Image 1: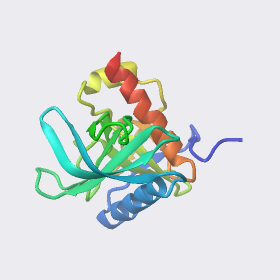
Image 2: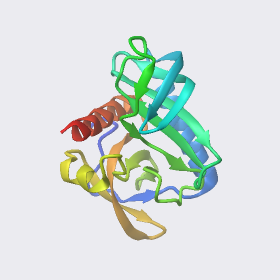
Image 3: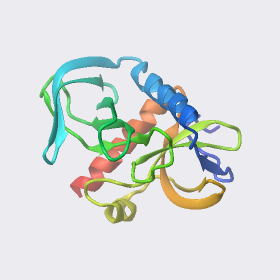
Image 4: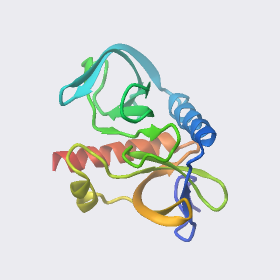
Length: 189
C-alpha cells in the first residue's frame, strides 16, 4: 500500500493558479508543518544566505526531522509571495541559520520564477512541487536530483517538469525533510 505522500504515476497534476485557492493551499501547507508532533518555535534567530539576512526571526524546528522553517510573506519585491526558507541546522546550537532551500509560492500561483507550486491531482488531492530553482543552479539541481519528477499542466497545457516534494497529508513534513536533505546533498556535492 502506498503512503499518502506517494503519487500515482498515471495521475495528471495541474498547477493551482487561482489566488483564493493558493491562499487556502498555503494555509494547509503551513498548518501541516507547524502542527507536526514535536515542532517547536525558536525565536531570535538570524536566517540568511549570500548577503541577505533576517534578524530576530522565529523559526519552526523539528528535532526529529532535523529541519527548520522560516515562513513570511513578501510584498515589497518584484513578486508578491509566500516565502518559506528551510534549513538543517539546530537553532538551539546556533542562532545563525543558513538557508538550504526556499519553497516560495506566488500569491496568485502564476509567477513561474518562484520555486514552489501547489498541485492538484485527478482526485483533488493537494501536492507541493518545486521548480528546481536553487542557488547552485537549476541545471545542477536537475542533473543531481534523485527524487520524483513530473510534468504538470498549467492552464491546460504541459508546461514544465517539477520535483514532487510531497502530498499534503499527515506525514507531509517527513517528505519535506527528505527534499530539504536532498537539496543539501546536491549543494554540497
